[in-house]
Image 1 (cartoon, rainbow, N blue to C red):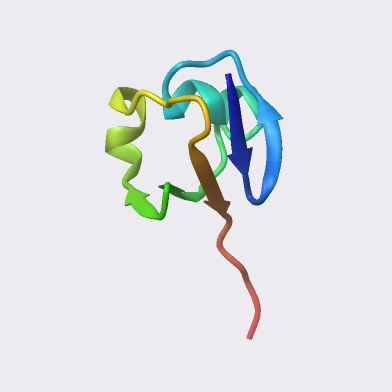
Image 2: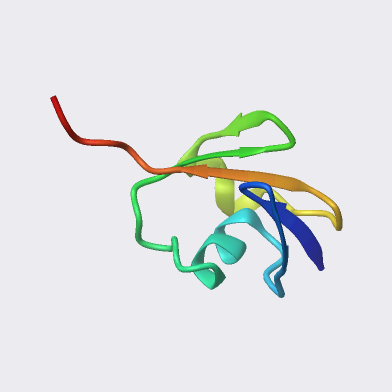
Length: 65
């Protein structure tokens, strides 16, 4: 299916958000996620089914001072 990831078009095979994140290389990463502008907690990722055209935002925490 085709989705938008951080503003770029991507094709993924995974059907759930968790599967898509693993496929895109963020499976073990500590990231925040939103689908179509709505925050998705880590505990909900395995049950969230993606649809063609969904917009996924993935944000990693920043360190610094």
